[in-house]
Image 1 (cartoon, rainbow, N blue to C red):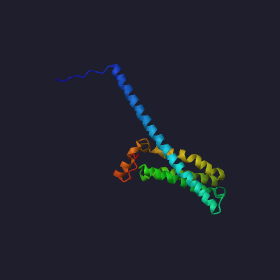
Image 2 (cartoon, helix red, strand yellow):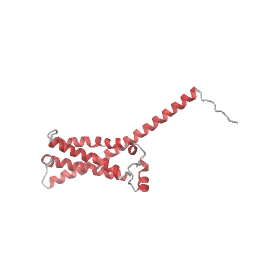
Image 3 (cartoon, rainbow, N blue to C red):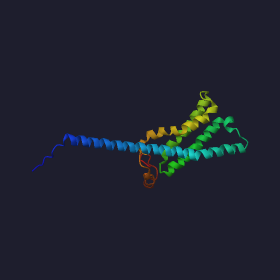
Image 4 (tube, helix red, strand yellow):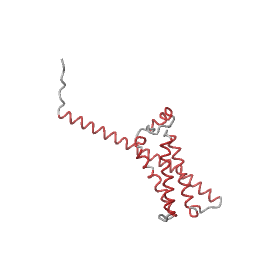
Length: 178
């Protein structure tokens, strides 16, 4: 004998719909939170690691006879500072378990930004004296671009990174790795 299940009441349907909406909102908030935390981590790695290295670079340049390196060679200064800001971020991403592809995509943003600013300076669109300031202002926000292209990597949980590297050798750029 076949049993017929009773149809849900309007109240039950509305309650189920409300619960589904609430769960979807929680999941979205969680993903947004992971994205923001990752972005802040990248900015902190870049700044906390990069600023001391930048100070050492300009101090070293002054010690070898170039106390005004930024003014005399703004393009070189911007290129080197782009690299300096990129290095600690690469180290942090690898430490957090990111694959090389995702790491290099993220690292490329600061290098592309620095190169673009140099081109704008060479074309006279941007004052050469302002390139360094623009680089330091835009280096962190520029990282949002690759993050938006790989939401799966930047909206997931951080604790899975090292497990992912252990299982995949750190080479699968499509799998969430943090």
